[in-house]
Length: 56
Image 1 (cartoon, rainbow, N blue to C red):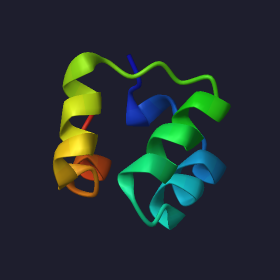
Image 2: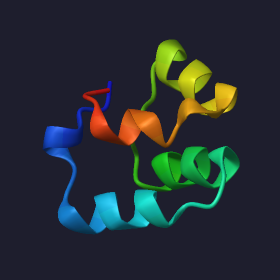
Image 3: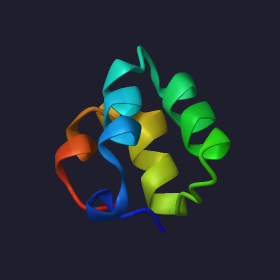
């Protein structure tokens, strides 16, 4: 499970630069970050931007 406290500043910048949920999921995969079902649901449901401010 990804926790934003564990992400580097570079990873956070990359995540903020994502234009849609597909890009965010692809970024997580490329960075070796495993997302939980709840996290994937939040991302695919369009609330991925809001979860940037929360612990995953």
